[in-house]
Image (cartoon, helix red, strand yellow):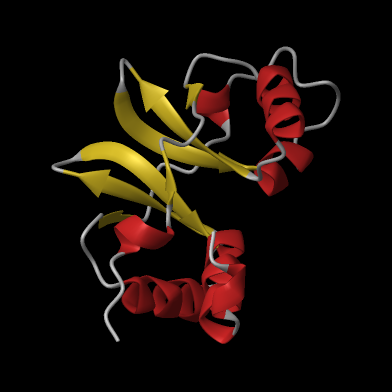
Length: 129
């Protein structure tokens, strides 16, 4: 069974600019109930920041910018890749998300939560979203 990542990813993910603060990122993640934010610089993908990264910053994070803590070794995959390849990548590398690109531009994010939703749908098609 081939399932395109496009069908399982979260499209148009919320993101954060590289010059915003950790405090802003924490607030955004809490309000949006997300654990990962792609980091953009002048509209281009620059990295990713996770709630785990934010927890490592002491204090309120008002004086720390995202550029100082984001992971710039981003794992990005093409939108048309088979989702099972990406699930294997997440499992094998113990990462929580991959950024999804279409012709080099950010178009989505695929997280372990997305993988669980997909698995749930495969196990019980009545749960299709």
